[in-house]
Amino acid sequence: MSARDTVLGRIRAALADVPADEAPQDVPVARDYLSSHAGADPTGLFAARVADYRAEVVRTGPGDAKQAVADALQRRGVRSLVVPPGFPEEFLPDGPWQRLGDDPHLTVAELDAADGVLTTAAVGIAVTGTIVLDTGPGQGRRALTLLPDYHLCVVREEQIVGDVPEALAALDPARPLTFVSGPSATSDIELDRVEGVHGPRTLVVVIVGTEPTG
Image 1 (spheres, rainbow, N blue to C red):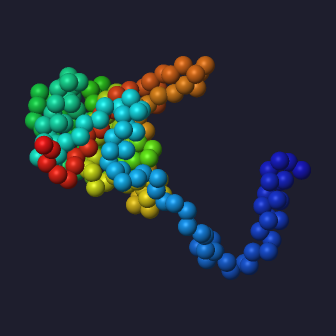
Image 2 (image 1 turned 120 degrees about the vertical axis):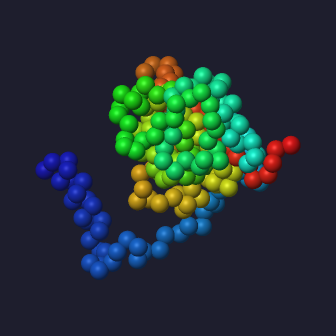
Image 3 (image 1 turned 135 degrees about the vertical axis):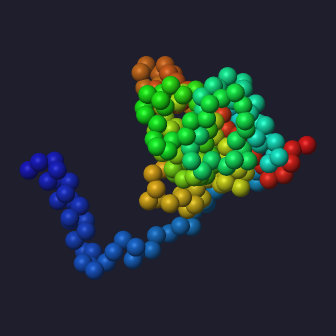
């Protein structure tokens, strides 16, 4: 008997007393655990946790968001910028950069040659400092945020939730989800941190608050 046969046999034995007409959704699952550990200021916690990952965080008001994006792009010296379809025009500044759309799709070489990508996100998670992209408007397909070495992401304050359970409840599990916690980095080899192996080495998150900044 192979290991596969052993595993499948044990699963069948464990399910032997389950009625044939019972479906997973018919069985209630207790959800009485604490859904968030974020505290009273999830936006402040999100900003702090994102910064802990060595990402740059900019907090701004709705009237200053476009300038905050422009300032970040200028600091980086961006000359070619990938902007996915559906990115909010109110956050998209004019500048010396060439705007690259993705309709039709840019090639891998074109994405690799771009100086950066500008996106929105579906959700921000305060406790983990994570942004989640679901390929919705302004986010684009997954390759757009993996190949360019610079990712600037605009997150509205109202998109920030406290913790992972809240995020999962807000997301559509049928969509392709990408969870981004800081710039791409790995310490797999002898615990030496290497950045940029699986995605951008530089992540900038602009948090757009609901109130004007003072």
